[in-house]
Every structure is written in C-alpha cells, then in structure tokens.
Image (tube, rainbow, N blue to C red; front, side, top):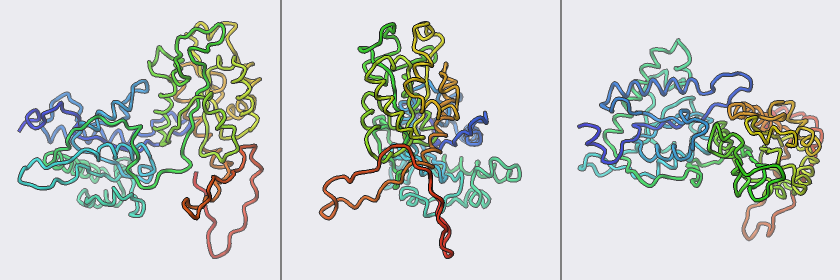
Length: 441
C-alpha cells in the first residue's frame, strides 16, 4: 500500500524528534546539538531505506532545522499535527524542559486509532529513545507509563544511551544496531496506528505534560523600546509598532520582532521565557519581591529619550542585582541609528552604569551594541549564561509559603527586597553523618 493511499490528508513527516537542546559553551564555536543532528540524519536515512516514503520529502522533523528568523511555533505545531510518530529523546535535561513537555502534550492530544479495524485499541504512537539514561524516579508519569523494552535495541544501548553510542567509536556496531532497530520500531508503530490530525496547537498556550515544572529556570526578557505612537524626536516609525515587543532592529535579517527571536533562543537553552515590555513590567521589577529568575533587558537606545523611562531604568540600576543583564541592539544599516544626534554610549552610561559594568564582564559586544542578528545570537547566549550563574549564586532563596486554604495565610507574606545582595556568608560545617547539600541553579 503506497503512502498516498494510506494518508488522506497532506503527509507530514513520518516522525518528530523531540529533544532538549544542549547549552552552548560560550566562546566554543561548536554546535551544541551536533551529535543529535547526526542521530537524526542516520535515522532518516534508515527510514528512507525501509519505507516507500516519497523521495525528496522530509521523512523526519527536528527543530534544529528552523532558521532563527522563522516562526518556530507555527512550524513545530504543523509538524506535531501531521507527523505519524513522536520520538522523545530521553535525558535528564529533557524532562526538565518545559518546551519538550509542551511538544509531548501537543502530540498526546491527538487521538491514536488502529489501522486494522478489527483491533479495538491502538497502542501509543510515541516511541521513546534513550539519549542519556534516566533513573526510574526521574521519569514523569507520562513517560513511566509507556511500555517499551529498551533492551530490544541492544544491551549497550540500554546501558549507555544513544549519546555514548553516537560519540564513541568503540560503540559503532552497537550504534548502527540501535538506530536500525529504532527505525524498525518507528515503522512498526507508524504502520499499525493512525494519529488523527487535529487543529494545529498553539504551543505557547499548552501546559507541559511533565509532572514537575522546572524552578529557577525562568528568564524574564524585558524589551526597553519606544512604541510607534511615542517616538522621540529624530526617530521614524520603521521597526516599531503599537507595543515595545514589536521592535525589530534588523528588518533586513528577519521580519520578526527581536523579542520573539529572543524567546526562541531562550527555548534552545532549555529556559522558559517570560516576555514583557519595560514600560509594563518596571513596577514589578522594582517592587520588594523575591526574584523568580534572571532578567535580560533588550535595549533600544532611543528608548532612553523618554524621561519617565530613564528614571525607571535608573531606579532599576540602583538595585545592582547581578542577575540583571542587558543586550543593546542597533543596526549600522539604519541611518537614524548612525546619525550624530542618535543616542549613544554616553547616554546609556549615564542611566544604567551598574548594569553596563556587570555586562561588560560577560560580553562587551552586548553592551557596546549588537549590530546584526547573527551577532545577537552569540551575545544572547553568553549574557544569559552569566545571568543564570549570577542568579544561582546571589538570588535569595524563596521563603517558605504555608499551604493555601482555611489553615493558610489570607494574604501573601512580605518578601525580601531585590536590593544589593549581601556578601555570601561562609559555608557552615556539615554534620559528620551527612554530606553538605548542593544548591541547584
């Protein structure tokens, strides 16, 4: 039976590879997901040999193929709606990723029915693969409930995971066997089930399918930019919109606002991005609350020409919170940005000297001005790594909150200030009978 007669609607990819992006090492210049890409290519080659999938059609989907300027949510949603089989790549990082949990949730919403009408019940169309072994207690309930015998893919695979088999030449034979059997398993599930297509999901609106959401890994992306109805003298409306989130300093590279591109990059680092404009979030950032994650300011220098915004930025700078970082973006192709009367480094230094000083230790380019989309990606990664490290080191622990209900408090307790962090106290000597705990970022 041919592919065209098996699928009544437009054929999507045979399988969707869901995986947690590896954090990039600042300055390494290497692709963090090189070995996942190799596995993906080898798995695609294997399926093309074993199926009658149309030549030239993309048999698999992984979101590494998305260009930075593309609308990743729409492409991912389409692939999750049309693929036959969902292949999650298990690792400890995978089950801590909210976006991986959303991908799982999106596919799980599709009804799975058997192709054989005589069968009353279809098996799941999810075929898990182990990238890095995860202990049973590290599996969320949706993964623990899947019935899959990983030893069928080989003893070395079950013990080591595909990452070791992919990377180490010693396991070459074991790797080829595991990929072949994984491909066979994907085909078996794809040929015996139909994952019914449904309305394309909006991934941003879905909750993660995993039990325990990540804590301390929220990145607040705050856009400091004017709107098209409140532009300073000397600035035209090109690149702006009704919201600061519409700001696009690199229209030649992408039609998308910088804020949405930053959200994509945060996702690739395994972070959940909380997006907002500085005008709307300034009061929240300045109030006396315990921070929930690091803050990244995306700054358009023209925004400093507004006196109210200047005062609020200066007030935020006075907190000297080390987990607040900034990336300044402008384009040399924009004649207004390059004009003599355009805001420059001196104005920035006058308003946020503390944030700039902290940022220079991570990336001078991010502070002096990122001039292209490609440079923005590199600067973003470096700055966010530093912000995460600083948040892990200095942010105060959240206070204990009693459970809500009749016995709980009627209002939220007062939290500590976001002021300058005190010098960290010396580590207390742990009792002899237990090892000291380790704080997780």
